[in-house]
Every structure is written in C-alpha cells, then in structure tokens.
Image (cartoon, rainbow, N blue to C red):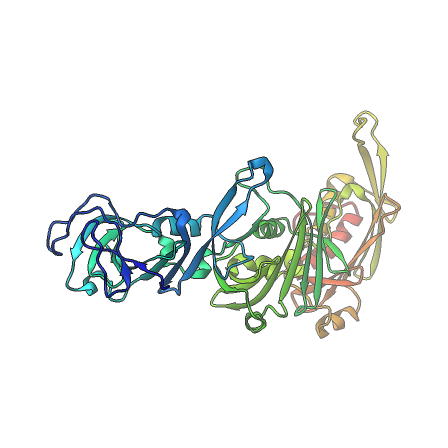
Length: 490
C-alpha cells in the first residue's frame, strides 16, 4: 500500500485530494481568500501530530541536505527503566554531534505552526517557492508523510514562506536555522577540551607532549618536572620559551575547528589532504587524559587536521594551529644559550683571546641568615688566584655570560656549521657546579661571519648570536680578571 501524503489545504477541516497523491491535513484557519486578501495573523496549526510519531525527516536544500532519524535508548533500572529518544543524522554515526541541533530541526519542522496564511497565490516564484530553499519530507510511523517547501524569508517577520508540495497556498512559518544546513554542519567542531566550562575548574597542567615531524626529521618531547618545562630532541634537553610554551599549551588544550572538511574520509581523501603522512603528529597527556593531533596540507590559510579517533577531517586556521603544526626545537626552546642559576655554579673555566681564566667561587654558609628551610651563603671569587669582588663585578660579568640569546637557527648538517666548528672557538666558558652529580656544561662560540657567531653547547650547535655579544664577553673577561667593573647588559 502506498504511503499517503499529508499536504496543506486552503480550507479548514476539509479533505481535498491534490492530484490523488496527498492526504488531507487538519487545519484550523478560515477559508483563505486571495493573496491580496487580509492575512490571518493568528497561530495556525498545520498538522496534528506528536514528535513521537516521527519516523524520519528528510531535508533537501542548497547545501545538500540530510536525513534525521530518532534514536531510542533504554534507561537504566535505577532511572526507572524508561526509554529516552534523541535525534541523529544518518551518515554521521560515530561522530561527535551537536547534541540538540538535530532535535531542534525536527521539533520546529515536523508539525509546523504558521503565523500567517498568505492565501492562494498565482505565482510561487514571488515567494521563492519555485526554487525552494529547502524541500522537506516528514515521514510518520503510521505510514503517512508531510511534504512541504520553504522559500524566501518573509518580509517583516522572522519566518519563511512555505507551501505544501503541489499546493499554491502560502503560509509564513518559523523554522530552525538548521533546516538549511548541510550534513557536515551537525558535526561538532570542538574536537576536545581539557576544561569543563560548567565545572569552574582550571585547565589541568600538561604532563608530556610528543611531536613527530618526518619532514623535518625531528622527534621532540616536552616534559614538565620540578617546576620547569624542557624540550628535547634526543641530543639535548633545553628549557622552553615560557611565552611560546604557554601559547602551545593553550592551543592544544582546547581545539575547535573552523570547518568540517570531510566525514568518514576515504583513503584517497586522507591522502588528498596530506594526512596519510602527516607533516606533524602531536600527542600529549594531561590529568590522565591523552589526545592526538595530526597536521596535513595547508590551503588558503587553512590547515587540514585530524584529532584522536574522530573519523573526519577538519580545517583550522593556520594562525591557530601553526604553534604546534610547525613546531621545531628552535621555535619551542628558550632563546638563552645557557642560563644556569649563579647560586648553583661553583666556578667558570674561560678561554678568550687564547688566554685561560679560571674563576673559583667558594661559598660559606651564613648562619645568621640561614633558616631551617633555606640556606644562605656568602661567596668569595678568585680568577687565576687573584681576588674578584663577588658583588657587583663577578655578578655583572656572569649576567652578561648567561644573557646571550640566539637570533636564528643553525642547521647542524650545514656546511657553514661544520666549517665553523672545525676551527678554534673565539670564546669558551665551562660551568662547574657545587652538586658533584651535575655534569659541567661547556659553551663555545665560533665565528661564522662578520657579525654572527655560532653557539655550541657540549658539542651540539644551538644557533647564531650577535657578534657584539661575543666580542663583549672577550673584553669583559680581561676586565673582570683584574677585578675591574663591567657594564651589565649586552
């Protein structure tokens, strides 16, 4: 038996067969006159059905359309053993959806209430119904259906012009904006968030980050321990740049896409968007939760990504994602070449202008200033056996040594780096520590040009620094060795 179709009628409570295909709808308004007649502004119920009667709702629109179906689940025995009905979009199984989006479309669209009865019109084109914004078919469990068209926005109201399929009687109705969505618009763009806004709790600290970039040949790890955060490439471990790390942590704590690019992507689509071999894969843990992000190609300022096990490809603005998608050791690290705390340093071995300087920094506990929880020391410094005033002379000199910052990255495999390191360093400083278990750290600077020096820490190239930094250290060393005062700040 064919399904009968419920359509809109112009006469109240009258049953009219439209071309033999549509069954009558129960209407409550008076007999409409013509399009020029005075419109009825009272609420007009166009169909007497309940939302529980809906079997499915099919929408075709200029964005493609979608099909919504009810999904009934049984509640637990503790909840009384009742059932609960939600609404989902066909084809989006397994994807995170906006919880109420589909339900709102169904609630507003399955049984319309008109605010106006425009009446029978001679031209549907005047109302955008010849080329409708949406074609809707609501199928009910009793085998009937309700078919209608949505046209232009109605002037002077928040509604749209509407007519039953095959009818020239026009109404003004309000519908949910989701009626004009494409299927991808129901997919949630917030991929995950470490913060539950309703809980009022702070974002949990990130414990560990792993970044893998086969294109750059880097495998980076970022770890947080003892109130400090370091980044390592396996060859060296350095402190992170606080600002850059904060930006990174913020960017990955809550990831919200700007577009849904592909749902249930095929292998061909995954390759098309550069996610078969991601340019960057980032994984991290925070408060025992783990997340993974993969970065693919960029196009028109948009980077394509995948997240966790979500079977979809998303687009996110490059300006938002670049902090992790293009991360390198250099971009994440502190730009200070080496910055040990002066209170931990027991001495320095310096070579400058082919001269060697040995600074010894002896310490004596100050009993009157020390407490049970904090020890305070007095320091005496010598250079090659000669006394150097600890404050301010040695302190300012030390400040200049650790204040040197990297300007740009240096590729360890480049010819320029290899050539520079084959020569003699212009300046070398070796940090020694009171803690016998802590290994000394050696920093060397090699000239690579008129105004640039290569910084090397324990034989690992770090990057390029300004030449005046190094020449200033050479001059300062000779001055402080004679217990002279140097100007702090390079």
